[in-house]
Structures are given as structure tokens and as C-alpha cells.
Image 1 (cartoon, rainbow, N blue to C red):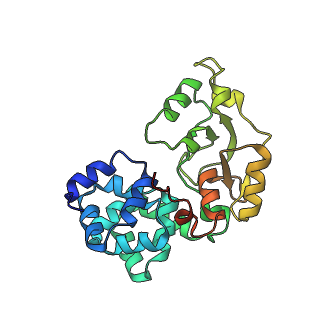
Image 2 (tube, rainbow, N blue to C red):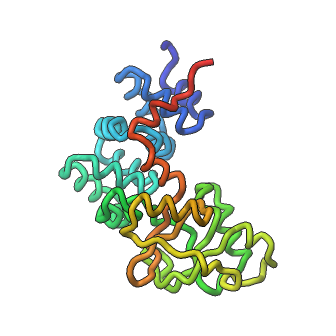
Length: 255
């Protein structure tokens, strides 16, 4: 209780985001505000993603608008879109205007879809490559430190444009398969073109059955034209399927 906010933030830096979120949730309001103010935007974004929506809304609402927009930019787009949807419409519109246009456009696009659909769960930032990409290039992309594990398990080969919504999705390549190929080989030569894609309007139950049936960590989401819109990762799927208070029920107990 006597530890300074800066020192507490340094202590939290050694914890997983979910564990740090649990600590911050249990702090008194004034103490919580001090700790949040002392955290950098990227770390705060990681921690917010692990909190229940009501805590996210409270913490974001206590930030000045400029910083709130910066933190939203650091969050994964699907989590940021869910959080924006919980805010009062005037606040949401203001924050979207303060964000970088490209980041804000991603969120607006995600917010069009119902929350309980593939479109509402997907992230629009998978690893997307052109048809002439080599295995070496694909492996270089998935080695990026900031890329979540669930998104690093496979890459998606599409026609231009290579940002979602892309041109036609040609297929996906599993990293385990790519590791067995020569670095100079083309990714397009080892595509999995047999696993079906998920339509953007698919329900949570449909997505869960698809992921379980094909043993996927992430499933590509397409529109009627076969364009890649994003991917649903297994962690986001579980987040939507578990009870709303599952985070409180799974808090680690003191030892």
C-alpha cells in the first residue's frame, strides 16, 4: 500500500497482462488512477484487453481524450472495436476522430458486424502475402515479436490489395508445413486450398465447430466475393463463448 505508483508499475511489468489486469482491478480507485497514469500506452492497451468491459470503459473514461485514442490504437482492432461499442456514441465518435485515419477505419469496419458473428470477432490484421512470396519471406513475417501466437500459425495468400479487405483469398499456408520447405520455394505451391473458409455472417457456434473440426488456431473470414476480411483466432472465440464473468472466476488464488 505504501509502494509508489512508479514502483508498482515496474513490478507489474514482470507479470502477464492478464495477471497485471487482476492486480489493477483490485486496487482502490485513486490508486488505480495513479498506476494507469504511470503506465505507457502499449502496456495499458495490453492490460485493458484482459479486463471485463465495465472496467475497460471506466479506465478509458478517466483518461483525457488524446490519450484514450492513443491507447485504442495500441489495442488489437477487434478488442478496440468491442470497447468503442460500449462507449456513449458521442464519446466513441470523438475518439475515432482523434485516432489515425487508417486505425479508425479498421474499427468502423468491424463495428458494422454483429458482435456474435465471425465479423464481430475477427481481427483484420493477419499475415497476408502475394502469390509470389517465398517461404523465407513468410517465415520472416511470422517471426515478428509483436505478432500474437495465434496469428503466427498460418499465413494467407491473396490477390491485391494485400490489406483487408483483400482481393480474392487464394489459400492459407500452415507454418509447420512451411518449415519443411526450401526457403526459396513459393508459398503458393504449398497452400491448403481444401479447408473451407468462414463467411463473415457465420454464428459463434458455426465458427467454433469449424475451428474444432479442422484443428485451427485461426480461421479466415471472407465475404460473398471470397475476399479476406480478417481471421477469428481461437482465443477471441473462447472470449466470446465463455460466461461474461469468466475472468473473475479464473483469478489466480493467493499461495
